[in-house]
Image (cartoon, rainbow, N blue to C red):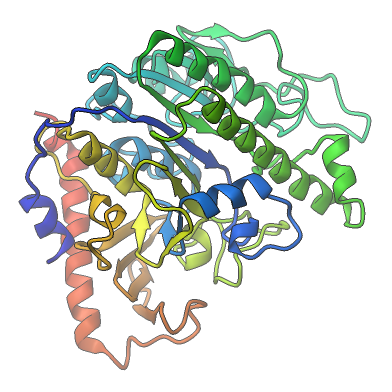
Length: 452
């Protein structure tokens, strides 16, 4: 079945769920597939993520919705490709009000909702100069999380240094010059306390009380925790750098800030256990795209990096831990994508998506039950003049326009070294027609056709 046919044929789910598991979505920023221990890295210390992988489901082929930040984040919350609503790149467009995403849908089901960390789906102030677009110059892109379904927010518009996030990075001694980005709390209040030190810890200092408060209230919670690490400016604290003192300075900072992020994941998992809610909390971790160009990040031997639709730009580390539903130590080569997060969560809760608009993700519930090994619809991508389609073992891609088609067998050639397009013209033609139909569907969505 083609992706477009699947989207048009998909029927809304029935609201029959009687339980409401907690949901926590964790995302790193520019973390490469090979930057974690559970994918074979033997230098960067990620013991808590490794433990999470051992306790849950590890994805060998999990894809970011795009090879850059903002579009992937939009795909998580909407289940839709960002070209359907104008987020073509980082710092481009914003999450429209017509896109009713996970926060709105779960809040309507009685969830306490919170966003923590990097937002990057619109500006957070219309009055003050802030980050990349905040203030009067970007007022048309004002779309803060507290107006997109989140009850609690502790958010930045875009990147910040991964240590002392409000300060501009200086020499080894640090700098007191403001970085130019604020943390904004619910309703547009600028945060002023507890903003020094490791940024992942600063974020988790807000997540833990949010979780504790929801448990005390006796309500399910939905927390979106989008770390800034290891996105540039990459700064690690002294203790973390010391762990990697045998390496050059850039590696010390990069490796150190990943380990600092890992420690906060461990802190969250320990909190869930101590509160007695770990068993029925769906905890999902991934990255938003591959590692930055010319940096220490590892793709684990995959071709390409951030901004590329080759595997190194879009295949990212991912783990789903949910003790009530997922057996420990599970590993899957099933191709999944960030757009699958929304339909999977809604399916598990028995909730219907918003309206009859096309989704680009599918529910992974059958995968979680061990009932399927094959994906029912392809995964399609557009980014920066590139386009790609993944169907099972095969991947078709090209630079839009005059670029020739490239076809790879990802089971036999994960490094995308042998172009099979000339050997399999019929397969190229079939996959290209699916991709073209999907692209036209995105154009219709972006024109406003989905917002009745």
